[in-house]
Length: 241
Ligand code: SF4
Image (cartoon, rainbow, N blue to C red; front, side, top):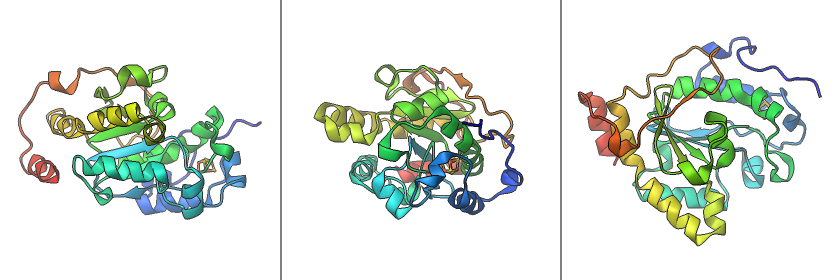
């Protein structure tokens, strides 16, 4: 298979709005997943989210509807959000690859690489305080080699964003123990967001050329020092929770 284009070789993408990125994704043929999808699934949610949830790839229901996390795993994600509580409209939800891998297999590295510019542009545009990865594949996009069993629920810095690894909701459907773990981890998300305000998280670069995942291991949220409160922004976040 020919190596697909990666990184910034997508003319005009760096100037695109979130809607324009979605339009590009819907018409994209950069990898083989375009041949088997019903609908591409660019992402959905707030244009100024505190939390950006990033899963692995669309499943069957998502492929049919063109929306992320609308199946049973999505229903569990909704119930997890209500624990904090936030609504779907308060967050943004997307995936590493925007088209469904056949039979829900893991995306191939070349597919992840081909789709990378879209996710990077979404992160640049949305400037989330926290990126919550859902599952192993999403975690390893940001932290190659990390084990979900070791790092779930432990905030880490990535660029100037708090990275918050979570198990995939589908795992919570298969195991009541993992569902309980998911609930415990999600309840810690508000703390991670409030801590992120003192770190300047959310002010991400708009340079789409620096795209190798370069994680920066950080301390657990409870260990992160607090700095000057950013006033209005922090008030808005507190109202959210
Ligand atoms: S998975 Fe991403 S790169 Fe591949 S066709 Fe879909 S939008 Fe394009």
